[in-house]
Amino acid sequence: MIDCPNCSSENIDGADACEQCGQSLSDLHLPTPATEVERALLTDRVGVLPPKEVIAVTPTTTVADALSLLVEKKIGCLVVVDDDETVGIFTEVDAVRKINDALDDLQDRPIGDFMTPNPQRLEAGAKIAFAVHRMDLGGYRHVPIVDANGRTTGVISARDILRYLSEKMAS
Image 1 (cartoon, rainbow, N blue to C red):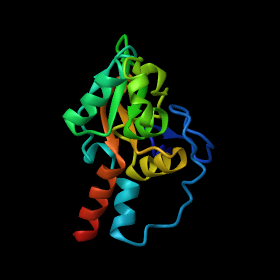
Image 2 (cartoon, rainbow, N blue to C red):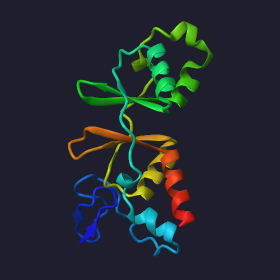
Image 3 (cartoon, rainbow, N blue to C red):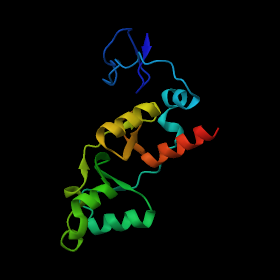
Image 4 (cartoon, one colour):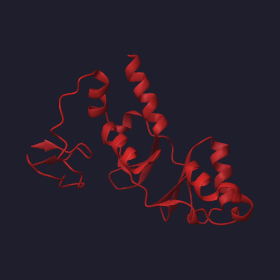
């Protein structure tokens, strides 16, 4: 049996994808980690980072209110929730790329028009290496963390991972 690096479900040896979450299992033939940092990335779970509190808004929240919340809370993203379901994420990158200097014209528009819909999510049990891989492939700086029921419980950022790596390299 082989454990999935994303959800830790047991799978039959030789399986190409996890039966539980669909994660590819084809990269499990990687060489043994050469350093303690490499080992930690491949064994530690996202939950050790720890994920930050979810600051949620609805899709109808205005751009002005969303930007004020980002500044007030000193955070880089808001999770957009509709009927207790995560439907998007709005980040400082969305603000710069999609709103930029048109704030005066767009401040009363709903944030749902500018959010990134259906963001990639990870369970707290996903390995940190998988989170790094997912963020790199998608060009994400923030990833919502979900529980077993798919409910968003936190957010991790590239900064969280860099802090984790700095701590591992210092020890």
